[in-house]
Length: 90
Image (cartoon, rainbow, N blue to C red; front, side, top):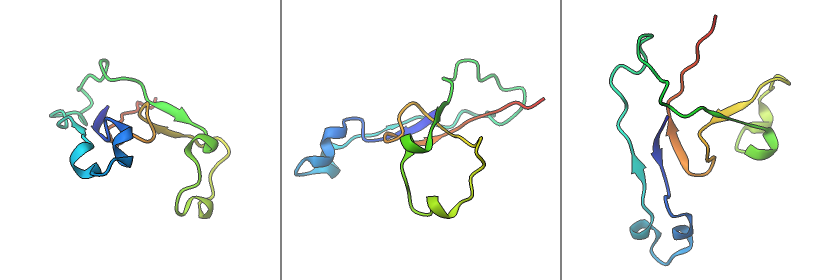
C-alpha cells in the first residue's frame, strides 16, 4: 500500500519552481494494519523488480545479495516513496 507518492507530475522537476509545482499524494497509515486480523485484500499487490530495473544506488555493490533476492515495492519505483507491505508465511 503506497502511503506517500511524489511527484505526482514528474515533469515538474524540470520546472523553474519545482518546490511550488511538484505535488504529492499522502494516505494515512490504516489503523491496526500490522495486526494479523487486519484484511489487506483491497491492497494492490507488490511489484518485484530486477537489479537492472532498480539500478545501482549508494551502497548497492557492498551488499551480498542472494541470487534469489528481489526488491519488492509499489508499482512505480520513482514515484512511490513510502509503502506498507505485509507477507504471510506458513
